[in-house]
Image: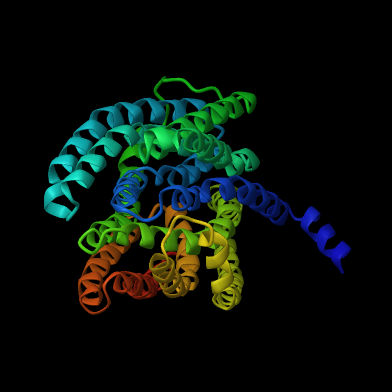
Length: 430
């Protein structure tokens, strides 16, 4: 039976790429995903860790949209036999120019707004402003890395992009280990920047070996890319803004609330990252080639129905396992950290609530890939706005009754309601 399964995987390109990419993704992200647990071990849950997680939520929310957005464009260009290197090179040049102009302005405005949107102490406000300056280069670095990773994925070179977060994680952990006593929480921000620099360098080498030559010449479709992708990115950022809302509202509560919520979120995000990082990457690439290549769109509709059954069933089973093993997971993750007992209890309850987000979140991730492939910016935009409005509303309501736990309950409700909207809209696309 095992031999037959292995032979089936080898003979099916999609299954083969999915299994290998998932494996590389698990290795790559496992290192990067461990960083918050090192933060918990070395710094605990304090106002300073709150400041870091607040800054990180803002920076990461502005950075991760392009990797998924760019793949359908590249697949379309490759299907037409046009120049991919010119297309990607032009995007990098224009994108970096925009980021260099926008990022400092954004950091300045956010620094000025901190006293109004948070309830940090004066000391923690100072720490937050310094962290924002230190971690600001991360925006440019991770955006470039995501574009290069998306380019390699579109060429079905999945392994290195999937493993590449490990380079960031290893460098960051090493830097924090060496300098956490002398630099304190600032070592985390610097470690992330240095780690992402190494990751970007490795991806550039991989692009060179794949013989994809980047240049700044005017490439066809770049003028179409920025308006279309821009709308998609704004929509994705609207969804990514939700963790920013959560961290901002958590700052209104007792010190350590942001950190406890961040530690719990990272625990429940680990299985999502492992499951989606390999499967959804290959799915996006193969589905994009079906739509813009030689096959008909009807094939994608059939594949979507089959995929949804697998994702729904697998997610339900995973939730049951995680609930049963919750106490063991918490003990392994935080049993030897600098966290106090009441913080560990708070993280454990937050984690239990957030586990139930996995099912609707995994299904939503698949459906949003369909929107990206068909470039349905209207659906992505409306979804982002809907999620954001629901999250703010339910946060305000639930926090009134349950404090920090209300934010976790709000997450489950928001993702579940928005999934209904997304499901109904995607069903009308094909």
